[in-house]
Amino acid sequence: MEFEWSEGDAAYRRELRAFLNAGLPDDWAELSAHGPGSDAQAAFSRQFCGALAQRGWLTQSWPKAYGGADATPWRHAILSEEMWRVGEPRGSQYMNVNWIGPTIMKYGSEEQKKFHLPKISAGNALWCQGFSEPEAGSDLVSLRTAAARSGDDYVVNGSKIWTSYVAGAEYCFLLVRTDPNSKRHRGISVLLAPMDAPGITVREVPAVIGERYFHELFFDDARIPASCRLGPEGEGWGVVSYALAFERVGAMRYARAALTLDALAEAARERGRLDDPVIQEKLGAARTAVEASRLLSYRVIDLRAKGSEPTADTNIARVAGTLCENAVSDLALEIYGAEALAYGNFAESYWRLAMTAGVAVGTTEINLNLIASRWLDLPRE
Ligand SMILES: Cc1cc2nc3c(=O)[nH]c(=O)nc-3n(C[C@H](O)[C@H](O)[C@H](O)COP(=O)(O)OP(=O)(O)OC[C@H]3O[C@@H](n4cnc5c(N)ncnc54)[C@H](O)[C@@H]3O)c2cc1C
Image (cartoon, rainbow, N blue to C red; front, side, top):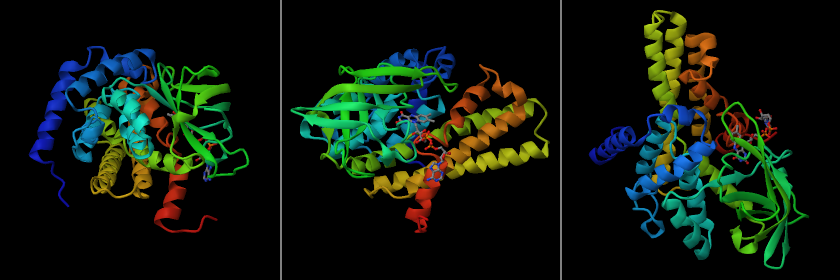
């Protein structure tokens, strides 16, 4: 296997870094510590993604017909690494590019593609993801939010929880049950729901991980045009499975872990802790975990570049990503002690982010279950 980047890819990464060095505001560290859900970062994301789009970088790996440049998925991986490395200045728009756009490309009608994809590739569209419900998190197929057909609309009733990035979101990638008599995977549909539809109420759920991170969405007779349905009615589970495979390996979180690890090694040196065998062991373990996460993510990108359907490799890469973030945040606690928990310390903002890694986009336990059944072919019980 060839691990070196081509000269073109390496040059692209250099250009990106130069762009970030010149383009990120002086107070970026403070801005990014508020989290991608904050109003300030949501506003910044439009400006920043617009600039990326103008350079042709935001969706370069998409087909030309949809605002891309037919570049390989590796270019997109480089973009994602460089963005996560500095704290993801694309804000929530990383979701659009990673999985919302590709899922619309695969399942959308021509009208939906024409309407949504240009906005996404111009870097001027904010989305949120309405999957989880109070009684349907890991067991997502228990979802109950109902969408009943009424003329040209669906009338939606129910609620969602833990919805991130609602600040300024214009659309919600919303999972609903369109067949009230259906169970589990059947009878589920996806709606590309406009967030300004009457009957949608948003309530913030305060959280330590960042401002305006989590929300509840309430749907009270919200009328969503039937033309917003993505894919055939009742077959939304296939759509969501496709989307999740892109979502699990899209945010290259190991890139930030690697940068944090370098800073932690430097902090250990400054504090005279590099001779400490506990620190040495944790540094080695964290470096190994970061590299494992990177290479397992590359395996998924390689499969994508070859046009393969998503496999359990995405679950494996996701678990490796969580282990790597845990190893780095564990090291931060070891080096900084209680200081690592003080607001403003870079270890603290990393620790807060890492804390969520084993829960968001499916918990580690669920990913391990999926690896057991899909990869190891073990029985479910
Ligand atoms: C940072 C972050 C952002 C998020 N953003 C969004 C968002 O934008 N939109 C959205 O819809 N959701 C979002 N979520 C919600 C996330 O998808 C859910 O939290 C996750 O799926 C787990 O569901 P739950 O919280 O209901 O936990 P539960 O499903 O109640 O799980 C509780 C515990 O039980 C374990 N468990 C459950 N079932 C099993 C099983 N079968 N085998 C073994 N262990 C099991 C879990 O691993 C977990 O440890 C976000 C979560 C986080 C942390």
